[in-house]
Image (cartoon, rainbow, N blue to C red; front, side):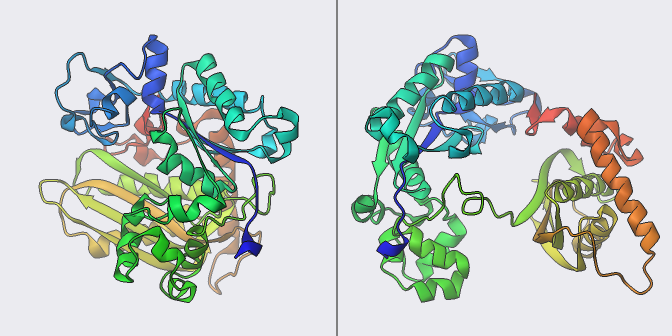
Amino acid sequence: MDAYKIHRDILCIDLKSFFASVECALRGLDPFNTPLIVADKGRGGGSIVLAVTPYLKARGVPSRCRLHEIPKIKDLIIATPRMRSYVAFSEQITKIYLRYVAPEDIHIYSIDEAFLDLTAYRKYYQKPLGMIARDILDDIYDTTKIPATCGIGDTLLLSKLALDLYSKKASDGIAAMHYEDVETMLWPIQPLSKMWGIGTRMEKRLNALGMYKVGDIAQGSKKLLKKHFGVIGEELFYHAHGIDMSIISDPHGYRHTMKTVGLGQTLFKDYEGKTIPTILLEMTDEVAEKLRFVKQRARTIHLGIGYSKKVGGGFSRQMTLEQASNDPETLLEAVFSLFLKHYDDAPIRRVSIRASHLTIDEDFTQIGFFENTAQKSARKALWQNIDIIRKRYGKQSVLRLASLLESGTLKTRAALVGGHRA
């Protein structure tokens, strides 16, 4: 097992209650003493609460819930999301990271989380990792007034686990986990869904195999895990030992392997079957655009439909294409086919479309005997040009006529950032 262990000096930094902390910073308020939530009141009581301040978290208010689920709180501030402001703060904090490490030693994991590899900088700073981490967190706060926590580890995985499991509870917001700590700090963790990379569905499957703590996975059979979960099971076995061979600066050794491309939206109102095709058309176009952007084609198309709360339920089905594709018309044909086959005439409130089994978009493809190759090439060139125009002038610069119908949502969503007001 030791042969698989790499030793790096990794920091995983999380910006605490980021959206809520930004709103406090913009108002000159302390997030640890302010009852503030981030939610769009204009969307009604069902609006999702994007963040709550540490002050409210400490009082048991969940960070992810619906607006109507927030208890009555004196002097509660409901801040409308300002996504461009959050992005601006995130960019400012990235510039702070660059004061300490080079760009190739930073991985921005999300808008509020990042990994920094300090392995090559220890001699330069002549300080323990904990002190360097403290300097960075203080720099972030002094510059932006955003509080942050940090996990330290020998690998990206261990730093992330230290962050998620321990640093957020530490008095100074910093915790470390090294290989020698795995048995005492990681193995006792339960339920398994507390472990990064294990969701509730996988947790149930692991429980069925008699695994309830992380230590059960580490001491279990690698063959059994691979039999039930494939390559992911094998990776899970190594993760339970703290082993992760990823290196940020290695362009081949550390990168996200994109498995799916997708899009989902909760509709502003209930849609009937006759009006939903516009939504399916818009969303399929967007999924195809994402595939073209990452230079991938999809072999499988998945459609999920959630019905209105009045009736409940819905369906989730997928279809395998004859050939992998990122052509909107080909994908739309599959989406419509799934919808017509499984829809049972109930009002619709939630739609998701996902493309999976991705392959690299090559310049060549297998052509059917009766296929009009000239027409297909022209269509590909058309969408490539549309992509160029939209990139320069925005999504609303080129729209299908269907998006101008009352049932379309693309024009409204194009004005949002991350699904929320800019």
